[in-house]
Image 1 (tube, rainbow, N blue to C red):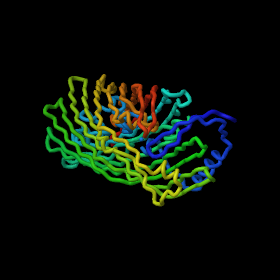
Image 2 (tube, one colour):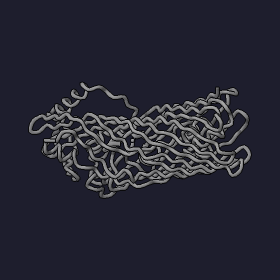
Image 3 (cartoon, one colour):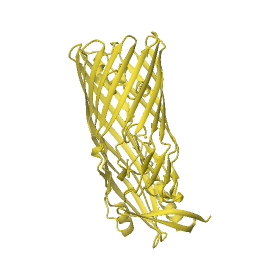
Image 4 (tube, one colour):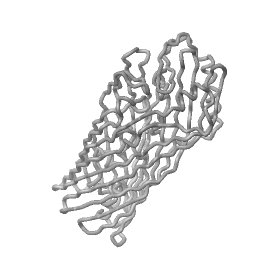
Length: 458
């Protein structure tokens, strides 16, 4: 089938756009793609839960908050738009504020498991230069399981453990211009976080923990220059890294809690297999290994919770230190001998993200001894400057609205559900930098989260 396509050829920091007429999918363009696909099928497939952006690598970006961070990991955090720090009073306090573990009402093992469905609607892009450069991303759907466990009191000490997925994002594009840099990007981050708290008094508690983070990533993209030469690359990698977290809570009165938490930056040193190729002057495929470093940035949260009668309000401010994300640079174990592949895929890609703030308010209301209602609102700043905005993560400032409910089934069991809507502002980038070549508007970005959970004491 003969088609008109807009395509681009990336050379270092430059993007040259051209119309390619009478281009058929059965040409050597398809042959090189099929060759690389067959090479990939020979490799062991790595397990993944999409969370993206190896940007030119990195992640479901955050599908929720600034960048690719996902604050909502439990029913209460979904229902209260992430304002679940000073007010945390379920087993998920092991993750959100382990200093509160010593003040949990029950002296028992407390377990909570949650399953969150995440829907990312299609994002639309309208280019200012030509409708042939427009595009829309694929709709993404994910299931995110998490669990939390807190021990009974042991001489003012309590132990906790959390299994979460704190970062992520996924974007896939099929149109020629967007997919030249982001045909598919995915980063999968899994964290196991054991913590310990020490309750100094009824007024003061401290906690700390170790972050064990395993991540896998995949990136694929291709571009075509005016001569018809196609360049393509795919990479799969993984990493195991370590970090830490700290927490402190002060209760000036029985109704007030002031808390601070800090989660350290973790650099994800992803290593894996790389396949790249081109179709001119003949089919050329290169297989090697490669590495890239990406940040899972530090997060500082300050939170105030106050209980008045049956209601508790939680005001939380958090700052994510995205300025760690300065650039992406792939390090290949073998020199990239082909001059065009070398020009396209070896230069560092600047990011220069900014630290960003999140402002959250959560409300819980004890309707009766069995039912607790929850609601939340939040505003998340984007860390991504116009100059480095890309199709792998077309982020913008976000407004979050949420509701939820908990129901006590028995003395030992509780079930809950929460829903969150994440509305992202439209974003226009005019005369985008040579790095991205974006000159247009992104619209319709959003996220829907629906979480179900079960808590059990034993």
